[in-house]
Length: 107
Length: 464
Image 1 (cartoon, each protein chain N blue to C red):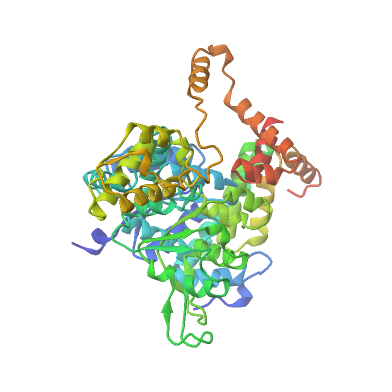
Image 2: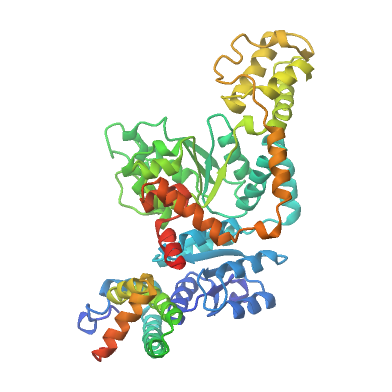
C-alpha cells in the first residue's frame, strides 16, 4: 500500500524515491530500511558532534561520506547535497564553518 | 537441495548500515542471498572463510582501501567477480580498480535495477577455470602477435581486461590493429560464446545512427517497414565494438552515456524500456583527450569508457615485431593464394626493419599481399617490392637511436639512491608543468593528464 502523502515531509525526503523503494522491496522492508536510516542518522549526529569537539577533520569527512550516499538513496536530497558539499570542502574552512555554527548554538 | 542453497551468495562491503541494507534488500528481492560487512577487515575474514559468488563493495572503507580488498580477492584460488561502488570524486580509483581486475563499477547514485543488473552480469561472467584461460591465450597469440616490450604490456593489460566487464578504450594510429585487438579481447573473454558486433561510427549517417544503435519499431520513421533490433540488442551477452568513436555526434553520445549508466535503452519510436548486457570496447585514431578538451567529445562519457585504456604502439616502435608479423602475413597470404613464398631475403628484411611504416600493419599487409599475388617464387627479393613502396613515408629509413637509448638506460641504472625523487614530487612537478603549459586551465591540464579535474584540485589541496 503506498505511503499516504501526509506522512511524508517533502522538505526532508522525496516521496517518489520512497515510493520507488516500496515498489522494489515491499512495504515491510521499506519500514525496516527507513528505521535503519533514521538510526544511522542519529548515530552520525553523535559521531559528528564528537568529531567537531575533537577537531577531527578526517572523521568529519568520513561521516559526510556515509551521509551523502545514504541520504541520496533514501531521497533525503537536501541532506545529501549538504553532506556532499561539506565532504568536498577544504578542511580548514570546513572547521571554521562548524566553529561558527557552534558559536551560534546551531549545532 | 532447498531454495537457500540454490541462491547465489553476494557479499556487500559498505560502511553505511542503511546503504548496505538498501543494496541487500534490492538483491534479495532479485533472488540473491546477501551478507553485509561494514568494514574492510571483517570482509577479508568473511572472504577467507567462504568466497562468495559476487562482491559488491565501496571503494572508500573506514579501515582499509577497497582496492586492497579487491587485490586480496584476486589473489585467492577461485576469486569472485567484484563490482565496485564509487562516487564522482573517486572515478580515478574506479579506473584503477578495473585495472586490478574489478568486474564492473557503479557510480553513485545508481538505481536498484542497475545494481541487480551488474550483479547478474557478474554472476553470468564468472572467470573460467585457469586451464581454459591458458587455451584461450594460445589462441590469442595466433591472431594478435608481438614480442616487443610495448606489445607485451598490451597483452598483459588485455589478459586482465578479458576477465572483467569493464569498458576498454583502444587508441592507436590507423592500421595498428585496433579491431583485431577488440576481437581478441572478445575471443579470450567469458563472453566469447556471445556475439561480437562491430560498428564503424564514421560510416553510419547521423540520422540513421540511433536506429542502427538502438533499433526501431515499425512506423517509427518513413522506411521503417518492420521492427528491427539495433546493435546494442543484437550484441546482448557479447561485445559491442565501436570503431572511430570520436565521430559520434554529441546528442548520440548523451544516449550512449545513458545506456552505460543504466543498461537500459529504447528502440526509436518505442517507449518500452529494454535492457542489454554488453561489454563495450571503443577505438579511435584521434586523441580522445584533445577531443574532450575541444568540446567534441563528452568528458563524462570519456571517463566512463576509458576504464581500461589500451594504447597500441605504431609499427615503427615495434622494431622486433616487424619481421615476426611479416613472416606470419607471408605465410597466410601464400596459403590463401596457393603460392610458394616462405621467406624474405636479407636485403628485404633490412629494408623492412629500417622503414617507418606510416600505414602500420595495414601497410605491411598490403605490401606483402601485392608481392604474393603478382609474383611467383619462394623468396621475397628486393625487386619484387611494389614500385609504390615507401612513397608515402616521410622518413623512409629510420634514424636508429638504440645506442642513445642504451646510454640513457645505463645512466639511469647508475643513479645513486640519493638521486631518487619521491613519487609525490615527481607527480607534483608533472601536474604543475601541465597546468603551466595549459595556461593555468586546470580542467584542460587534467584532460591531458588523463585524470579528472577534481583529482588535480584534491592534489593541489594536499600539497598546501
